[in-house]
Image (cartoon, rainbow, N blue to C red; front, side, top):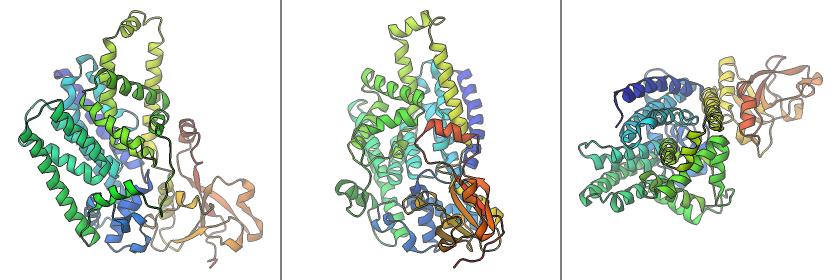
Length: 498
């Protein structure tokens, strides 16, 4: 257990984390994954009769998403309306701020619960990494199924590993695991693995396991009731999700990847020096301590997901909070090896300090970008500029895109004025395609902006990400889409082309 100096350090880090997470919640506008909007906020907008059900994605009719997260969103939006807060950008910020508050609460509980298993020389590193490993603040403000599911898994594990006994301890674990399952059914793999560890490794009393399971089932029953309210009829969304995952849906095909791609993505998208270290730490801890609780939780999840053809990086998000504890536990194991002793003995001649500085530099840079960048491709930054600049009138918005790319940049109606008109795909200087007041496009060359026959030209008024971030993002992922720009018709409001 950490001493008074460690607890004092934790308090200071926690205060700093409050500031960093608040900043991240403010700047991280928009959504990383389309599901973060279209299967949460859009569902709520339809429930509130602000948009027709026909505009919802196919997942609504398939009834494969638990309405639990949407119900929370619904309550937040209703509360905002009561307080006369109608700005969609403020409403979305409230969702991110709520997620950040939950994350800070869970992280504090988890860190305090796990300190006893961390050697004193590594406790401060564990505390810092738990809050400030570069991608964590960004993940911890996402009002998304993967984030909320992962946080409740972490809270359940905190109750398991904590040394102090609490009333109804395993009922709390079961409730957390039940919520994690409701938010993201695939989290059940992690929860079952944790329960198996309790049974086979810790040899927990059968009464405790029964308490855990009953609490989890009660929470799931509440989730079924929420689904009944939200969808208007009895439905088992988890069953629908599992059935679709197993048998597939011929009407909706997804890109398939080889089984090992998650491991490639851990290295690539973790910023490769840090990602490689995380993968090495996980591998080393698995081999050295195969009965470790966190190993038991992660390994089955990765195995099952690896052999499902459809893969997305976000499927790893429920596991992100395991990274700090695995890194530090593996580091502890490494200190007992002869290789570590040799490096310490020759640290003046070895590149160990250079490596440490490089890792700290990479993490600090990644943290700055993650905290100050909009989420996803930054389309909501452009939407905010449109709303602020065209609070009155009827602006027409077009997209210089094609049928296969427009979905990546199209702004949801939730973020646009009710009077705004979406003209769809357009060409900047071709009147036959319609030319509105505003267009969103990848950077237009000067020649493409000038439209002499139509007596106007397009000027850049906003971009989807801060200019200083672009080269860093290109270095991080050279395969990503180019930034998007918002252009305004310099001649003023164009006539309605329709």
